[in-house]
Image 1 (cartoon, rainbow, N blue to C red):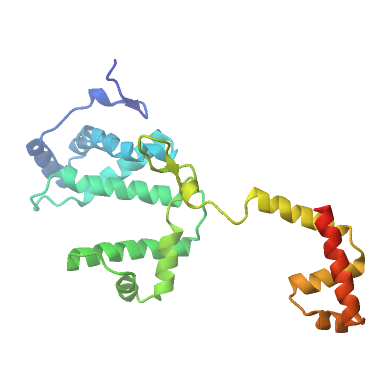
Image 2: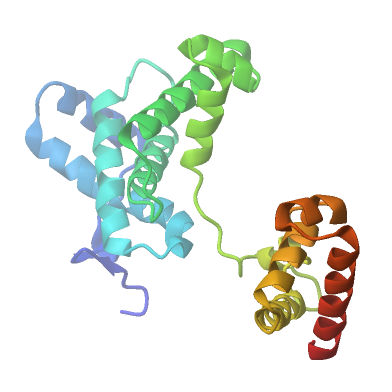
Length: 256
């Protein structure tokens, strides 16, 4: 019981284990239409699904849901497996299962992305796999865009849209000391609590000024106009603008 692993009502510790030779023989029967052997084969490879979904255990998804999606990937791998190639079934099936899981996670992402954008992203991923296999190297974004006959910007936008969000509290480095989190690297050093309080104080101080003084300071420091331009707009002399501005700033300094 200590080694019992139960998921979706299946006790995986009691599942059969087939050797490579046995699986090849079973696949030949399955290709011939043997449905009973097909069911036995799928059941015998559920442990493979379980081992793959453990890689996605930190995504906050229900393990039962991931297991069922992984089973879909397993079935697709079985339906598309070519016995003429000297490749183990598990070697072929694992990427298929991972792909199915990633597709599920993208489609169920908390950040909603339009269907057309997701379709473009999946086409770009497929093109990248084809070009990598063909050229034995990772293709550039421009090469992918050329392959799809799309603008480079559209490909970049589509691929960015399916990136999984990262928690601000995700550790990016951990040594013997305290961990460094994502938020430590993207912290806003400009809009701090101190700056926010200062802006609030300035806003309150502005409310204490007369309507004319408020207008003068807005024109001078928020719209960047000269004292002469302010004078012409308000209809007073430049000397009066200078005096009102000086008095208003003096009052605000005291208030703040």
